[in-house]
Every structure is written in structure tokens, then in C-alpha cells.
Image 1 (cartoon, rainbow, N blue to C red):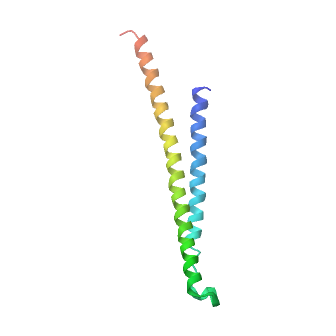
Image 2 (cartoon, rainbow, N blue to C red):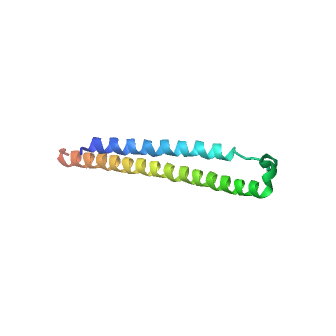
Length: 102
């Protein structure tokens, strides 16, 4: 795999992670908005409402944790790409300087 292909692959993978993070953030926001009142459960009562809220809060946290993790993965891939890219440029410059007459 060429250097350019490797850089393109890192960029594409980072975008996939960023897209996943955005989807999880949207889902977490929708989950946060799905609150219900105890009255909405009619005859089922407060216990059902409490159970619903516990599950909803868990799912909201789970989705938002996933968003943070996916975003972190995308950011890490970009840092790796930038590090390799910087290393490549430094190596090119060092090679150029080694062959130049002073």
C-alpha cells in the first residue's frame, strides 16, 4: 500500500467513525426527548413509569457514551494520519538537506 493510499484510508476510516458518532449523538438526543409522565402509563402506575425512565436514562447514557467513544476513535485516526504525514514531510526535508550542497 502506498503512503497516499494509507493516508486516504486513515481519513476515510476517521470519517466513518465521525459519521457513527453523529448518528449516536442524534439517537441519544432523541432518547433524551422521549420522556413520559406517570399519567401516560394510565392504570400501570408509577412503578412502570419508574422502570421506563430507568431504561430510557440508561439508553441515553449508553448512546452518548458511544458517541464520545466513536468521536474519540475518529480523532485518534486523524492524529495518527497527521503524525505520519508530518513524519513523512520531515523525512523528505532531511533527505533533501542531506543531498544539498552547502
